[in-house]
Image (spheres, rainbow over the protein chains, first blue to last red):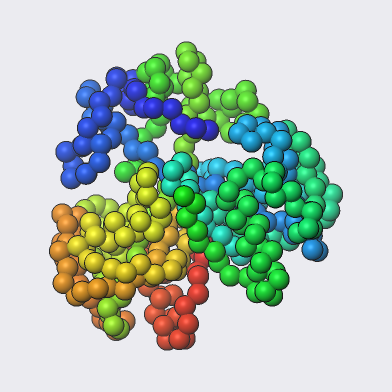
Length: 181
Length: 181
């Protein structure tokens, strides 16, 4: 899903030029010299869950790049026609085949370098039987002591898991907002 | 910033076809029959602030469509190379010329129908002197009783303001997550 450079106009196919539009904008955009379409590129949301079964958390072993073979919380790019929570629930179903009851928003993590905002919700598993999709090698439950900390796929997942276990030990859950630099 | 339909490939300019890609995807995307580029469209983040000066809140009278002449909290589309908080602070400067100290994330509002997620931060104004940009007719402070509730530009802004004043009356601020339907 890494986006390629905009070379041609989405409306008419003409080669674009990069310049600051004449509409008061202050940033360079890909502008079409033929039909004047301005092409914007904006950050993407990644939405996921922390699915919990008793004192265990569900992790998925990735069957796709990047980070093939590493463990992650179920998460993926938010799509049109869904809310952040609906996207998080969808990804949990697609990647783990897990049935959950959605909980509150738990972490909002900015990953500015790659133009992403990651949003994780707490969730309660309704069963400990999973049916992982093609993007997942294995879906399984881990206690805090069992979590493979050295093989977690992404910084945002590691931070979210650390905050989850810390909050659980503290006996209260709060929203965490973090910038990953 | 309403996005137009993708008709041509961003990479090579060929007319795209809409189909489900062969990579395990389940949704129709604009796919290039010449170079195989897959074009994704995802929700956009709108980031803004609730800028507070004593018991007053800063609102901006819009000088642009949609909702020209209506009042809004300073907010706009999140850009690449910034965090949600940095975008919210930038928009507050661009639209109101207001200097603020950023506070915590206060509201996350999903507007699924238009493919947007709105994130508002609380903020403390460092001065009651403003310097609105070209997108703003007027920037001014309102007490709760003075807020022009019938002339608020967007549902997300109205909801955020209502929750802000309710929390202030309650003497505690919490994160609000809402779906605008």
